[in-house]
Image 1: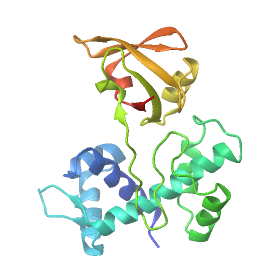
Image 2: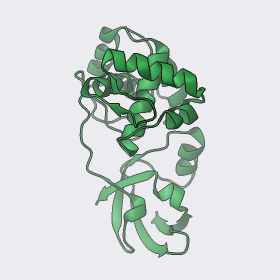
Image 3: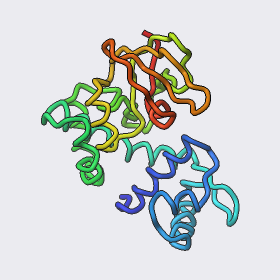
Length: 217
């Protein structure tokens, strides 16, 4: 069984590898707020387990087995979030911290039963794909709102920031999964956008548009 600490490292490695396949110990240290020597020690341990390709002062890469182990942790987290929303009635901005605790339960049967009760969902409450029992992550065909053109009408597929502050901001302006929105203006000087939501215009910063992923209506 993987320890809680190992699982947190695995999730961080998967997150970083999705941004850039080459990972540095400095990236890990910053995200987990852990000292570099401690990170280095864990990467050596992961290399011994066959989860990463690691050499001192060189980029770190997840191996296929490491990616699978990381995806299985993410599966537990996202299933828990979905269970909390769909079965227990929590709001989507209330579930992340609870799921952070529940995801470290070791019982595979516990999460398989959760999956069964939910009728095997493919995405979590924020639209992120839920890995299957084998650690395979479904492909989601979506693009960042940030790259949409003026006049484009799109539908919100997922949000990449699950913080309470961001999700409550989206709630306040009526943005949720499946919401239809339109890009009415792009400002080149700062990459902000004017978005039409329920016939009301809202200005989104570049940081916000990079966190919202959409599909064509």
